[in-house]
Image (cartoon, rainbow, N blue to C red; front, side, top):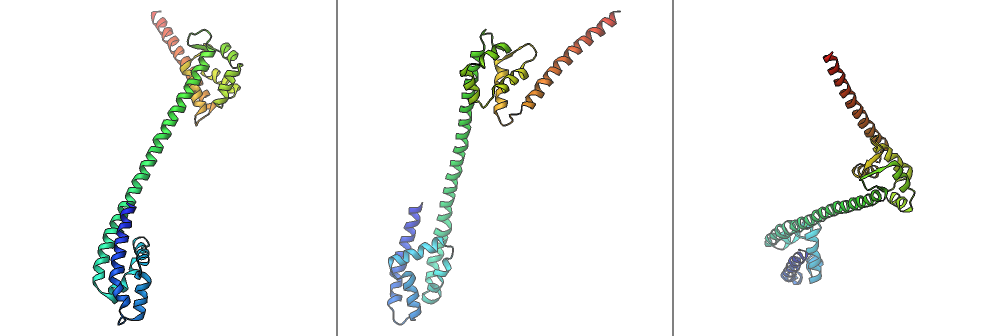
Length: 237
């Protein structure tokens, strides 16, 4: 795209430089006009620089109006076509292309971040599975408090917790929070609890509240069953 713009600038500069040489060499023209034309279009390099300013500076009338008013009106046609084709059309296309590439790169960055998060989550799940497997001595899919207290003393387990930004006291507290009262937790409960601690929330009180609500629900259900049983007994009597 930039090469195309440069070709437009170069071709237009060559045409203008050649056509305006007659004005520069014409002694019948005012000296001040000849000097102005030479300053901006007197050589190939000057004309290229002028057309670069016409294209990108936004002040293209400053480099055009004297050619139209003092040299020949036909230059107005030339610059109308150039400004419409290059300044407005080609540069807008280039801008749109850059914007598209930028948005595409941003989209790829977002997808890469999502992939990295998935990979990090998978690594965390693997670490938790390894830790749970070490703690589950009975291989029944559950870890008791005694098993967990034993395994957290191992250097390997401590390194796991350290990599997860968890202190041992937090891990033991997490076990107590996830325990439904039977003295054992499953892998799913353990993994989801650690995920909550490691995530943005990292709110122990939120997990504690969830534990308390679950226990309250279990007790309410037990009371409801007892009440139904009592009502049934009363009806028999």
